Length: 300
Image 1 (cartoon, helix red, strand yellow):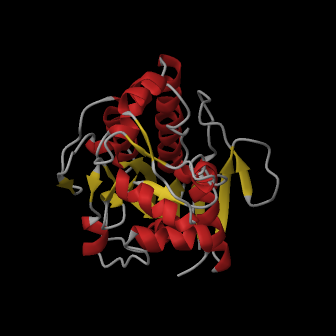
Image 2: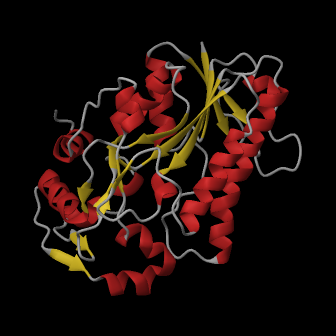
């Protein structure tokens, strides 16, 4: 059994590859630099031709496509928006083209996506059946999923609509942990906006579950079953690092500093993992306190 992973050096790709390695499953890692080991294959999704040799995917049991520039990191200028689009859509098209040309195409493509599909949901809980929202991210995710849907017949496509992935090794918690450990953790805006999150451990387990369940296709929400408000998240993270968090950042300050990107921090997204649970997936960490305690401190 062999699994091909793009974005294999990122937070989720690294953890997924290690999980598969531990179970004796062969992993081919797609990287954008010169290969450092025989398990790595260089590719360039930005090239106009020959972006990925179809032979790399031929005979694989599955492809997990996780490439994409981070949406965090400052204002969404026109150039930044184009980078976010290109890093997702061009790379997905390259993967799909290689699958179509492979002599023995993989039976499943798990393609990264995001709960940004739903846009602003307020207090309303949504599942995979909800329509796309509005705004830049919702449009980006819609086009991203459309690129994956072009995979040829015979290859099952699953869109991994991930929420905020909690990990002590980076991701959304990367810039927050130093502040919270100094007692400078802060609620953002009103604190009433919902955050849909998932422990990194459950993210990896869910991806492996979806590789092995051919009855599941299309969009799947990779979020824990208990979304929390920003205020609840702030309090839980402060407890996990055993420091107070009594500060608040006004919404107007976030909008002034981040512009359109501030919507990711101030918007409310209450997303439930209906398809995962209906398929029989069991979350190890359904609650925020346990997830943070394990991911940050290694305690169950």
